[in-house]
Length: 67
View (cartoon, rainbow, N blue to C red):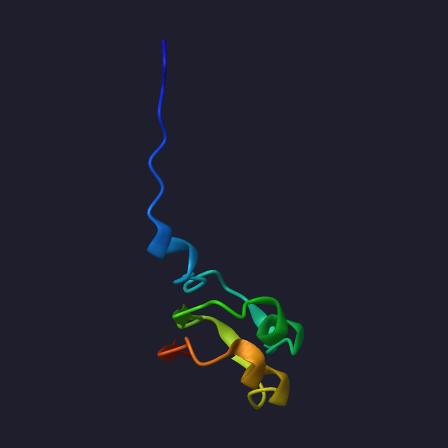
């Protein structure tokens, strides 16, 4: 049997981390780690605090940020 997996390349650039009951501050490291994101969804969690300045490293590709 020869199985093929099809990946949606856009899905790699649009992570959804919503509705996971995440708590605490927004991590500065996230901004530097995901420089190719186009969208990021962190909605419906219990995250707190300001947007870290390091998130500006997400680059120019980031179009939408859902908090």
